[in-house]
Length: 267
Image (cartoon, rainbow, N blue to C red):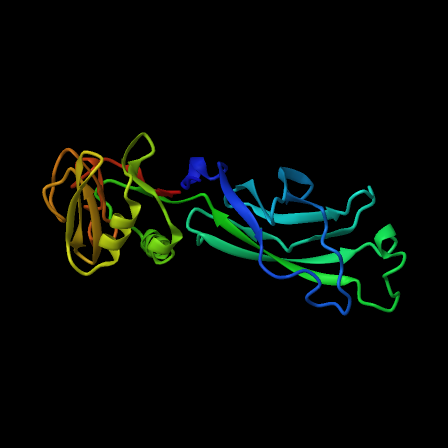
């Protein structure tokens, strides 16, 4: 999953999981389906299709695009449609929280053979499913201009990104830099803990020195640097909350050339 203008069409991999028991809003207990299919759709365009296994499946969704989830289910050995429905439209962005819950009203086919002996025609044949979208990775990315302070929009998106990152999400790897030059650490929990702590943190990861600390109006993450607010010329530094135009960069930390900076957490 990527952000920035030229990358917004790139997909993001998510997991679809059910969150509420079936028939929760009905007066009859419907048999569980043996086959469930979900489709990620933009109008009539289908981005991805997957069959749920134990209530979950991996699908690919586009960024910054109005999409919805189409659902249908079947019961063996019958080929007839058992239940179907679709969610309201929603948008996934590069700064979206790692978990998104989407409700789907599911309508049961009362003409299905399974209901020949069990269905009461006066019974409500509608229930509501909830799905949770959980990202395989989550990315913050934005464009920075040389000798220009980050805009309020950049600052807000960056803060929101970190507000939605947690050690409990079990991230394994973090990468930062720009799309053409990233450096990584296979101990994402240490980076998250260091960023959210009030104290400075200095540690080695994947053969490089990582520094996390206060710089100006917010936290700084720097790899290969000499300090939290330094002006090293061979570093990977992200610090858009600094309060001035030295927002970091790959190579020069100060007065860096215009570039895209990104942070990616992966499982």
